[in-house]
Length: 308
Ligand code: R7I
Ligand code: MG
Ligand code: MG
Image 1: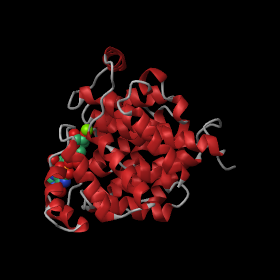
Image 2: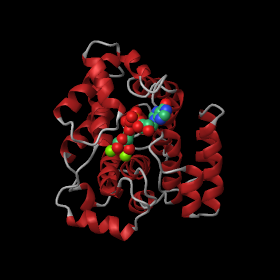
Image 3: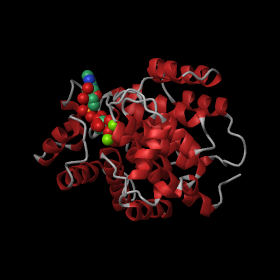
């Protein structure tokens, strides 16, 4: 059964605002060795504004460029990233992207600059963390989703594993968007679809581990086997696991993702995007979404994406 139009809009909002909330909740703990859910909530309660980082800042750039061009335009998206970075360079960007933005500004082509980093491109999680607008916009078109996830990654994360990470995260968001959360989530089917979408390799291996870990939850094993790092293959499967372990609670999914430590803002952002796409905007606790920095602008972007 297709998702009702109003609820579909709520899912678009959930994915984008979910990215921002997960990012902002996780940001104070980036690099920590595990944290408790109570501590994450307490820190958020003390903040007047939930401030986001590069994850959400770049997600906004993806949405802005997709909206402006009614789809993907590599040159425009690259310059949108560069312009946003120049306006707010303090957002905690990874080491690679600022270097690429300088190349772009110096006239290097959008699909060329990213290859000059780390010999053949980065496999950091920077292109997966920002991909929510691609996941919702192409939720009913997996071929376009893969193409746009791939090309949007190419700008800064040209390594095959960087691109696959972005495509996997986008497809998880798309699947979540297409599902009605009132019925029980078939986790095996969700994982099987993700598996079929991916080529042989590390992502498939990790998705198989997700399945085993869901039947016997163990935090230490999740960190050891899936990872909680800055590389796309050490964080996208972890976000998918975190969503699937608590599919009916945005708060529990995101808190448990951040509590794993490591790249907390990014794993929080990616878990929040999938959970928000599944459950919709209203499932994000009001005390968090109301305090999210720039929430009005982010919801406006989501609404406009839904209207394309
Ligand atoms: O991926 P990226 O934008 O960083 C995103 C992270 C998130 O946690 C954000 O919240 C922010 O804090 O930064 O930045 P990149 O520089 O592209 O990649 C991140 C890291 O991945 C690099 O600093 C490297 O440590 C690692 N990395 C690689 N290492 C070796 N060989 C990425 N690609 C390679 C590689 O090919
Ligand atoms: Mg960040
Ligand atoms: Mg991070």
